[in-house]
Amino acid sequence: MTTYDRIRVLWPDQFGLARGKYLPVRLAERGTGHCVTTFGTQYDKTIIPAPGSGLLEGLPDVDATYDPHQVRRGWDDDATGVVVADLSMHGQPFPYAARSRLQAALDDWRALGYGVKVGIELEAYVLERADDGDLDIGGERWRRWRTPRSFVYGTGRTADPVGLLSEITRRAERSGLPVESINSEFDEGQFELTLEVDDAMKAADDAFLFRVLAREVALEHGLDLTFLGKPFAGISGSGVHVNFSLVDHDGSNAFDEPTGADALSPIVYRCLAGLVAHHRALTALCAPTVNAYRRLRPGELCGYWATWGHDHRVAANRVPPHRGGATRIENRIADGSASIHLAIAAVLQAARLGVIDDLECPAPLVDDGFETVNTDVCAASDLSAALDDLEADGALVAAVGEELVANFVANKRAEWERYTEAVGAPDDGISDWELNEYLPFH
Picture 1 (cartoon, rainbow, N blue to C red):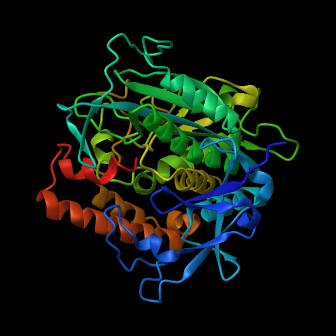
Picture 2 (picture 1 turned 60 degrees about the horizontal axis):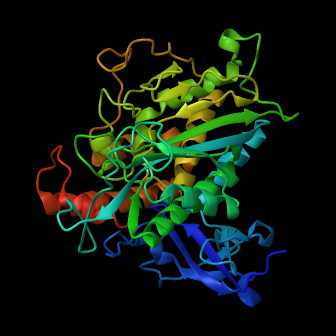
Picture 3 (picture 1 turned 90 degrees about the vertical axis):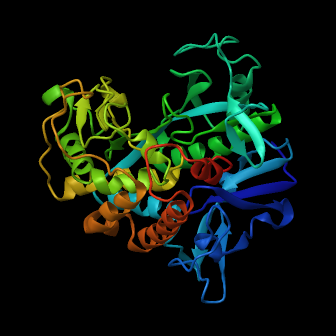
């Protein structure tokens, strides 16, 4: 049995960043307080009176507590455990916290008779220091990791010359973060990192911790790793794919129906209908930065159009060909700046609205998706417009949580204002402002 002398207690903030504290193990189980005004603190450390931030109410505490059975081996050292905490205030779940709202989404599905399984696919670029680097992170120059022998689906030293991804995999496995696969992606220095399917909350926690682990291991190697959606112009962006399925009362995959159309059950089509109907509002929650809209463009494999398709990677919602227990929907809108817990909650609630509102599923995308699509509904062109779309969708706002959305929108409106003040009229170029704003954190 592993013995820890301290516990690293982490929780996702409004940006999905891993806030927390190290606690000595003798005190750790009682939890700890954090100033709730974190929920009004921007990337640049300016503070706004966002709903729920308590800035004008004395900057009170929010409490972080956890189930001691969920503590796992950390990656700092063998004597440090790590755990994801719940946030509460006055003994009640904190409604502005993404993890609380994911639990609410799971409770909503459970009320309909279903559990939820989730699998997360991540994409990221590895960075290296270079005097001539085109990226500035904290005053240091960085560039995309040069791996000229790499190719898509590459493995081994041609893709990973120093064994960084091998070390990330081994550390993750030791920490109970089950990796399904890792390989190089399309562009040089880019990797796909896929985690195993699990119960939705555990899958969210695993992905949340895995992103922290991956960046910290990279830094140990003198490298860095970014999940940011579009750090480089002219090459592929990096996405986050949320795969989910429903489990019925006997533990079977409720999406699978061998005798159904395409061997899919009727509830699949209702879920797809909800995802397509709430596509525009989903975009802000899944693509929550200025930079995210450099990636969300027509003709890309990014979920720009409000579509679904059978094994179609240009569609926003893909139904992979696997059936039986592996039957699932893959939502492809999000990028690596998204809060994992919030993105999953939003996707699950949009799908649930399709079920409870008995929405009719549109026809699948069968065109190429690059030049020809079967819809004119698409993602917003920038963060500000996406926030407008979110606020206009009262049903999704209510489902995700009005308090959380109010806090999210306030923080993101302030972020957009700082961006426009810094760059003037927004354009399609990747600005130094957004790289300085996001790269240190994502």
